[in-house]
Length: 68
Image 1 (cartoon, rainbow, N blue to C red):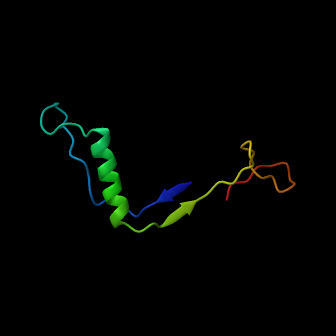
Image 2: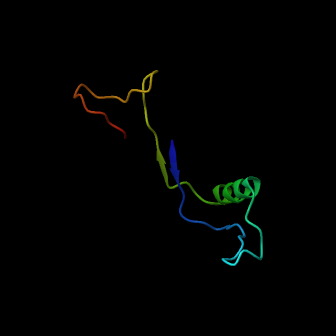
C-alpha cells in the first residue's frame, strides 16, 4: 500500500549545520510529527498492489506483470 498526502504542516526541529541548537528528532518524535500530519491532512491518493500467496503479481494471461 502507498499513500499520498497534499503537503506538510508540522515539521520536526533539527540541529543546524554547525551541529549545535535543537537536537535531531528521535524515532518517537519523528513518528509523532508524521502522525500529526496524517491526522490533519486529507488523503489524496491510495495505491494498492495485489499478489497471490507467494507474492506473484497478476499477469492477466499476458506473461507481463501489472500493478494498478
